[in-house]
Image (cartoon, rainbow, N blue to C red; front, side):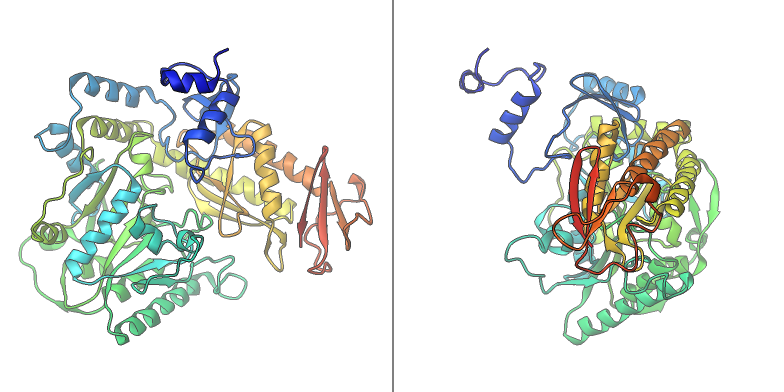
Length: 543
């Protein structure tokens, strides 16, 4: 067989030629940057095709995909594939020419949003969208400073790593920029204000008070806020659902000073409603719409909702910010928008877009808004509507949440189950009282899921939160399969636990002696170690 060195010298093989898995890994190690990471990096999967909510490796083994929120309407959906194919046969070019796809899609997309959000800028990724959103905010407010949530992730461009603490804190020698202001991650389980100490309806206000204090300090230092950017639900930070009324209160503080003016005509009423593509009208929060449509800012920032990971129905509503009854000034979207095709967008108000147009330089994105991408995007919306995928996320997602909470009652290692629709996190802990993260156990659980042909991953600061963001086609049978395997894995861990106060195992427990409080026993000290020896696999975790 010809060596890889000889192959590289004579030129690359056709992209359709097949390599062995070891050859693929060797070429990847040679030509792909080490910082470009893989799932299951110790033994990565080589995926060669996908269909609906399933992926297949080079040996045609089928895996249930529970983490791929890019393939939103399912891998290789025939309507999406055909839309791309048909448009590619006609033309694929940049957006400097008139074409129906871009204007028709922009109109259709805006019908899903509050009416004032009607101007679109098409880009290729969520990172590009968030970067452009910050440019728009700075242009409109003439300010620079950004408020972001500690633990949030907004992308990989320089501006975005600067505001994403989970990124800049990991970069050697990097410190938070003076124009970046972090607010606490509003987690109701692990956060400063949690359900152990406060009522659910109090927590949002308590976290919001921190923002009010931060803004006062920023202004006293002579700086001004350009924008507050937030994920409408926190993804990489641990699958966090924002507390009740949190965004309403923060939005009011960020927008700060206002003077009211009277608007004439029927346009005045549009801010009190939201219009959706199915022609249904839904009454919207009066106070927020009053603020949004009847004010002119004297000072203050704009509010950017990052819907890149949670938009397009994943949480049971088209946009996750709807759960908070707010109207953002700018909305960004990406990942699921093109179902694997590079497509993203920034949607904003005519006033903000006009301000950006007046700065004297044009905005051009070579591939943003190209005919093929928008043909794909239009097909994705067709599937979401025709297959009732938002309703599916609501109903099946609730069934899954119920089943996970049943497992929580059975196994003390599950500290928290949280989420909406097909956006769910399972927080694994060593001790429910201390909430110490079970990071190593989470890694083990993910590995065991993979062995059972189910793809899972982890999120959160400690890597102990199992994330669940599957294609929207996930069904009841998939829930049953997932819960059955998860139950078996948890039982396996539960009944293979051995405790020791030293580096050696001092006592062993048979399956008969395994009690539900073994892992989370409150009598354990910080020095104790939990040892696992399940089916020949051993690992340990400090308590």
